[in-house]
Image (cartoon, rainbow, N blue to C red; front, side, top):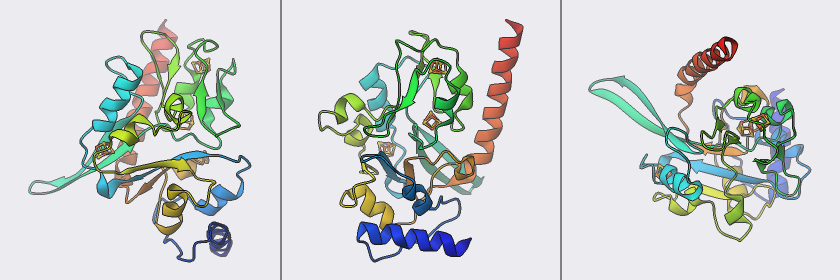
Length: 247
Ligand code: SF4
Ligand code: SF4
Ligand code: SF4
């Protein structure tokens, strides 16, 4: 197994024209297996270098402002991962947003076709005119990246600021990031900054075991909050189901 992964990874690096091999880290999804199945010409993706993230939340605020996101819900946010006991404590930051997965669970469960992955650029979007607010996609997303907008009653999440990107402008969170921690671009273009960075750095994705093949990558991400996140998610989903049954 290890030999196959290494071999495909080398193929991918070769395709990119990069000679330096990136080192794999724990929790890292083999980039090569991911890239090998791509058929689209363009696949937008984001790379977040957590070493450069200060946890300032400028990105979360920019996202809220860009979409007029109501109070209590977020398209994008920054998770704090805190460990240890005083005085030996650490705090790391993990910016979160929709992963625009290659195999998105949210799409397969949607009964109306309101949510889909765009052929032209791989962005997972929601057509709010077709969405009936059933919430299936919200429960299906393994990353908790969707919510029901309390004003419109339809599902919502990050769409990589498609209205800006189509005009050649970077997503609001990228434009705003004070630490230049976020890099956005076409991962299928071997000359793009994001493709080069991913090829030459150890990167990871959230929950590679889910098989969704995310398109948001991290450098030096602390995944230790994963257990807590899943536990909280289980409690939230269970509560949501109970409420639905009671109604
Ligand atoms: S992160 Fe969740 S909402 Fe986004 S594409 Fe993947 S499964 Fe769908
Ligand atoms: S809430 Fe909307 S997008 Fe989500 S599954 Fe239901 S119809 Fe589809
Ligand atoms: S704006 Fe940049 S540095 Fe600030 S929290 Fe967001 S990703 Fe981190």
